Length: 514
Image (tube, rainbow, N blue to C red; front, side, top):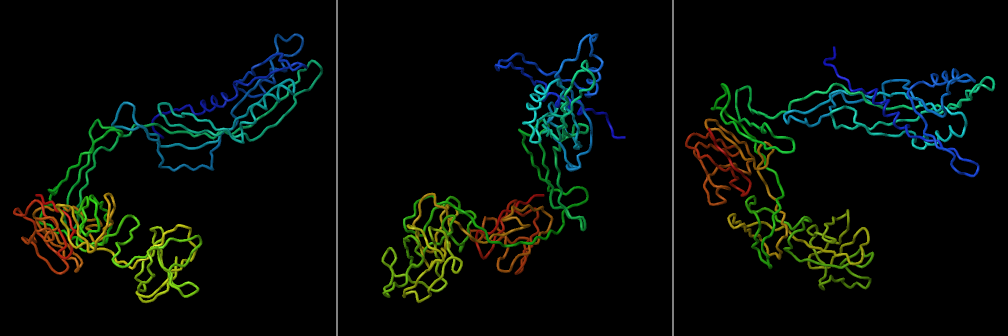
């Protein structure tokens, strides 16, 4: 009913593991002076205590050939029940690499948790022997002692097995006349939390994936992508081969119409300064290819603006909250450069140690004319040496780009060092939620791109089109204020670029095949 035969000897392993815990316990007997008289390793055997008590009863008396030696220990399995406190996911699998076949994995699909009851009995003829044995066991169980095993042969999977001490009891088996032997019994009850594992199987690995993108009604084939790894590749060493299908399979051919929605979103592009800038508006950067005119430029990860208006600097004293304004004698308070703080309402930007602060949340302001005194009052006192900077600056914008030389010109002068990071923010086209997606077309199909009216979607044979010395490509192209349609044919170049005719740096590349 359940399939092929398997046997992991879980019960046998449980008994062996449990017995191993107690197979090296010793009893030491000492004389009145404290000297060791003898040392006995306590024998351990599997079996119920009644078996050994019965033998003790049989092998006593003057004619007994030999008595059973005490102390000794006996253990046995007493119960087996499902552990209802642990519910395994039915889809859980144990998966490991195959030792000899890289195209397969070793798996175990099913396993469940059971509690195995174990009982350890300590038989001794005097209290001191029994107590020595018990005391060598009890401290390790609090109340559980966990061991680690490999439950399934041929697998490296390891399992932690808690062994829980659930109870201890003592009984004195002494009855009869002076010829009867006295037996003290200490009973320790345990629960082993074991897992029982199902059959092992070899499972083939998926080595090839074929994806076809198409619409069923009406039948439109977009493209196919095929991913594969080598027949001898392994999980630790592999190479992925990728191929693209541009010819439709079966009866799905060209002459399809594909409609795309083109979105516009603002993004942040970090660029790095590659040459020192000594108070100039020309900046050499590592890569200008993704930038566009009028993009906003800020400095570094803190995103504070280039100053285009007056800037005020203060160094705080311990607990100081107010900067600028007047003192108790109606004298204006100057900044570190002897300037009187003034700003236009709402145009100020406030930073403490180059971290932006916000009105109401962090400070209140006195709003007056830019030529008059004003003040900034923080909600909590600052620390001695903190730097406060107040400016009514507006962000710098890119006015010119040399893509070939990786040079930008901004609308103000700046002083920058090599390695400084500029955060350039601007709009980018998104097709299918992918920024500046590299788009693939098939000759014979018609492609319609619906776009916002403020960002006309156009085509060119030159990257960034008219913003980079190119012209608009118009062969087979139809445009409206909110859409652009192109039907590539055998005369269409293999590579085109899409761009925004109003803003530079927004577009991407088009590959044309078929």
